[in-house]
View (tube, protein in one colour):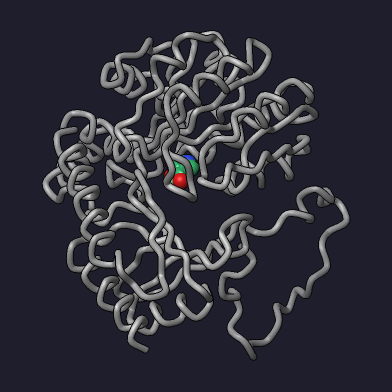
Length: 373
Ligand SMILES: *Cc1c(COP(=O)(O)O)cnc(C)c1O
């Protein structure tokens, strides 16, 4: 993660503020690195697992019209109850168990506040960096169990950790990030059931539309379980910032205490309403992503030195002999991807989002050119 290119170009003057921190900043915050992402301006952007397609233009226009028809001088719903009820209808969920926030990353912070501070955050390694950054900043005991060599869930290791550590919050990501691996439902169930009633169990389903997995039924079976979902990926709405939790009314009541009041404004709820009224494009696009991903895999199956690792998501890992060289080669071809080679088990790995057909063609051509060079 620290291997991303530096934010300050080499030779640029250091910040005039220097490196001193006000003494009041907690040590746990100082100790955590900044979120590991540096924006890069190039034609082909495959570094953030976004949808390659924007929210449809006619729906954007409808959302803008709706926004204009609403008062802006009034506070919105306290907890976005109106749109939460519509999300509940879409998901077949009790509205009392739906919690909406500007992006599911905020829910991860709030869940860590709810069940992690002074307690335990349990996850696997490698994992989504937000779980570990929040755990470290908020003062939770962070326990990371290494994935199995094939990237499957370390079921026995997680069960042992659930027994050995005081309860808190467990994060399971399905399909997983950054590997793209989807586990069997039996493996996920075994881990979730081992957590019993003492742990808050979060199944992060940010990419479920691509894998076809769905853990709503498992979540419904226990009051401490929660499915974390987002409009940032398959819905093509990362720029709108909307995420949500599906959980029991009891856990939702506790979680809502931590959600800032009035935190979904008129612009966001207008976009969300229009999306929920027109969900037809989502599955269609997810299916195209899967087809395109398989096309890239077929095209690069015999690459002399790069190996594409199987994925059930809208991104995949490429293992290369030298991630830095591969990253720079792609950048020289106008393609930005994400280095993952500083993470455990991901030596030499780049993470690449599935793009439009033209973007995937560019990736294939650049990869093949590397093989020749
Ligand atoms: C992209 C992603 C999310 C979504 O975060 P938002 O804040 O909703 O954009 C959540 N979890 C994982 C693992 C992700 O990769």
